[in-house]
Image: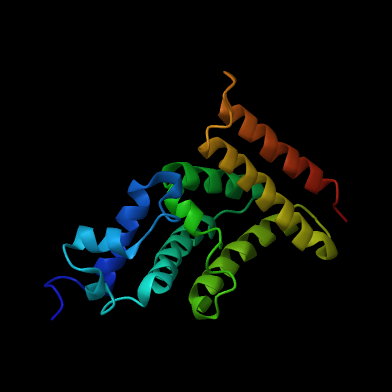
Length: 187
């Protein structure tokens, strides 16, 4: 019999708390054993509520991608989206890792996560198109923005910016440079 109060949502919420507490590696380090310990149950008890660790990772990723999509859906510019991505990553580095698609992007069972991720990419594509990037270059521009912003975030989360200059100024410099460069592609 399942523990009182333990259901799918409760297990995913416990997993999210594990991810949050784990910092930048929280998603990568997520285990059923850790979630079970938080729930006060044995690991096999979790299988009544989630489809093993792969299923739990999908469920966590879905929450995180939808959460991030809710942030980007009302943003109009590449700059706003870039700053939102960094803000999200700094506030919730484990959740940020979950949205990157390292474990679910090729998983056929993760179709809901993939759809939510596609909505985020559509938002970014809209911002790129607003800069006048030609349609045949749009996917390349989206990839460039994602790669540049993600690279900055990974370096920042890993403590890679040890010089005394303001990291916020550096990030604004990056985003402004991306926008300026993409604007030059205007048709």
